[in-house]
Image (tube, rainbow, N blue to C red; front, side):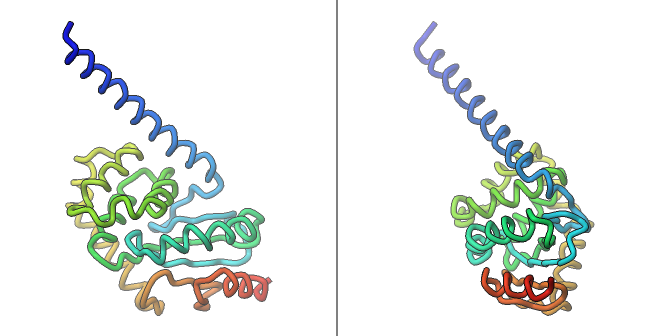
Length: 206
């Protein structure tokens, strides 16, 4: 057999390993966030359902400030207030540009039990896909990690009901007073999106 044949087989083998690793990684992320696998009316719900304090975060997957919030503020809130049952967090979509809209549809196209893990990965790796000439291509790769085929994603893009629901959610957010992202509300009151302000508001509500 030729060297080219072995090279091709080796490439296929390595590609299969890479795909398997990515799928396992996403599955592990899902397992690690098992307490937060609820999706309701297209909102991701993080925390215990009977937690007395409600935090609502409006975010866009293409927003750098939202990515920074997710990397820096969210882990602190999760550790101190969500994991302890003090509060629960509703993450609501507010895509503020075309890239954010595409990313949101890809996320909503995924099975509900992996949407949180996919959302987390998209935000943490935002720099890897946001500046692509056509963000649909790298985002479809993220969809594949969640078990969604390219064809299924294309069908979601053409799903008038899904698109209409997203724009209805945007209209409702604007009625709620959302003008930019990230926007944070605690028990209905708008709060600055930094850890100190959020922690202070939660402790005041206890």
